Length: 265
Image (cartoon, rainbow, N blue to C red; front, top):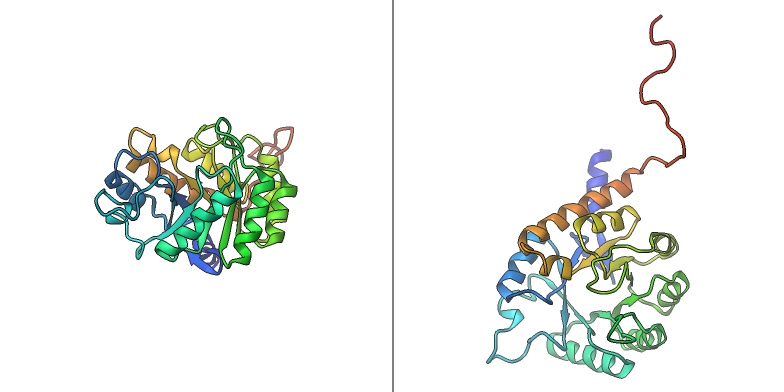
């Protein structure tokens, strides 16, 4: 009975009132082709894909389109505002996405500069509030500052997406303490976003208690994106089960694993 309960909880992720089976979200950028992107998505088991509306062809029928390979009826498309450096651009991009595909669950990222791609949190908070008032379900990319993450939750974001390290850096989770604080204080899902470089990084994020992870570059830029996507699928499942099962506590000194007294009567 307990095993069945654990298995059920591992699969359950709810964002904005919608339930998803997978806790892995993957992107659609940097792949060598839409075909490879499709195969990687299938191998990952993900339900949600992020789509950079400013960079991926959705409308132009004269050019290859993402939707020719990946069906919005089968997967949940989550438009994002990659490449937006102010609130107006982000608002315009996401309203266009809703007009094109009816997509109202969106990833908001308002960037500060082209070198670090760190989020501009002042613009992010302002934009999130406007989108929520316009009936969007907002998943907000943010720094790993617990105070700012809580502010995003307070304005009504459906999920908080703190970075592990700079976008596309592959540095993993630089500040696990802050990620853990955000996880412990948030009542909405926490999705680790940005900086993941390997499957072990994703597993670690899940062990910290994150509800999901978003991965793009680590899969798309690997030698074998399809195999890498499958490795992330397994890592997320393992990390989540580890978190739910309760890790042993760390301590300074050793404890013998076999009896040290009364071995023989």
